[in-house]
Picture 1 (cartoon, rainbow, N blue to C red):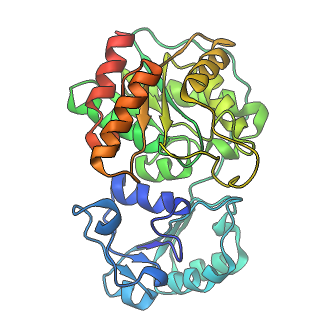
Picture 2 (cartoon, rainbow, N blue to C red):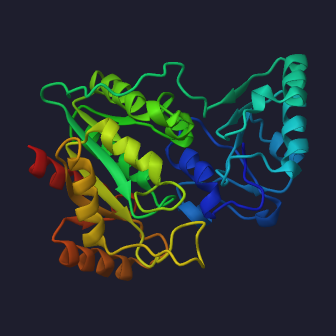
Length: 342
């Protein structure tokens, strides 16, 4: 079961939504008392028949084996009002999975309760043990590395990467998703929490991640983080671009989003798409040449006719193939990437 109290369906619940949509394990319930009585299908479609419940007791009736923390709040702290729910879940015999910056396994109260009950607390945002700078590693012959970048954070870069990987596999192309965030690691079972790595060592960690991924597939879709012009999260984007040295990038954008997430009301504005294309290619080119080969749109807030019009407008504006791969499938953008990279 997923704990997303007061947030399910909103941007902070992207971990919950990502795990439900792409994770390998069955989700039996979402805990959110403010939306109790509703169903996940209202947000994600009829394929996701999962009740939203008010209490842990109700959720336990559905026989979960683990509690997953389903939000990614700024600063990555556990909301104080959630402590009791986590404790009760542990005492009920549930493992706990968290992607917060604060490590729940190191919380004395949680750790003692877990030891007593014999359950496991897993923190998916732990950084790698190796701290090494980038060495300028070249990609293996025949490998294609594609990085998703964005005009903002919390805009769908992980979902786009997963949809492209899935489309490639369905087309018979050996492809792999390289997770760089806690939700992606939860979904895929391996990867890197890039925003926990010491800044000097981020590019080196991403180099090793891509090297590992190249051993698993011919096409590597690297999950992006943040955005180059986000005042709070630009550094992790830069590290991913220079560490992965992508052959191509897919720029992710939400039509109608004018200001950066978390900075609404401040004098910072999302730049036009052609500006983003030029900036990303220039920044990547400081280390290794790369191109923005396609635009992926997040049209979740648009009706389908308007979504298709937005896709056509972006194609005209940028001269690049555009689509919403989550809504309409990743085949078109994959075809564009294969045509560009060979």
